Length: 301
Image (cartoon, rainbow, N blue to C red):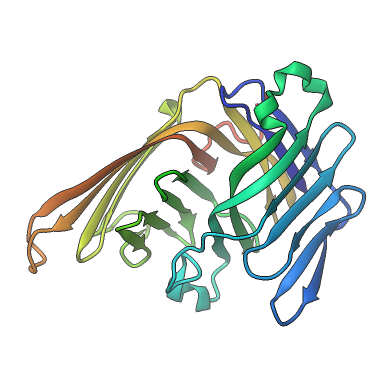
């Protein structure tokens, strides 16, 4: 499935198409640089050409989109993936962030929108966030939160939920002066009940999500919320038995507040001292599976 969603700054009207295709062909174009194409017959392709260079070219009956980036912002210098050591385990689900912020040029056409498609959204320069998941299927329930301030070169990215009988999250915070990662065993709730380092508050009716997680030296408190209207759209998710419609519900009008604290002393009982706060507007917030009670119904705008 190829999913395309045009999301205006106001959150309405949303233009969305989900193209269920017979095949997506994976072609390695340079074994040395690991460059590859994802080719979709009759629709277009995504192409990589060496480290960080990516091109998307798609043209459907009622929309077309092209974008090209010459570089990317990796998860971190010392760790290429949010999972870290977990990447070596035979888990049923893996999550990789290739680029937190890729500067790009783009061209977009949606003829049916007419003047409702602003000139600034038809062509120009922007940034894109690039991820990959590979798994037997999506988890029972999951959350996704993402924000990036290109002007100040800082952001936050989070994914996780219920899997293998646990509740676990992978989270990264980035700024020019501070880079933090939280992964299990810190960001996990064993048997969905006990966690000495993490607490989670998920409330879809109020469209809010909260997570507090710590390791030995730092603690991060994150709160995300979005207005109930406008701005929400559904996405199909892949499972072993095929795509399930409207399994995810997402908004790009979220506000994310982050507070970071540092332990005041060397002892594990030392108090926390807040050292930073950040606020991101126009961020991404997604509820999916068991965290999205209206899943499966037709809720797209």
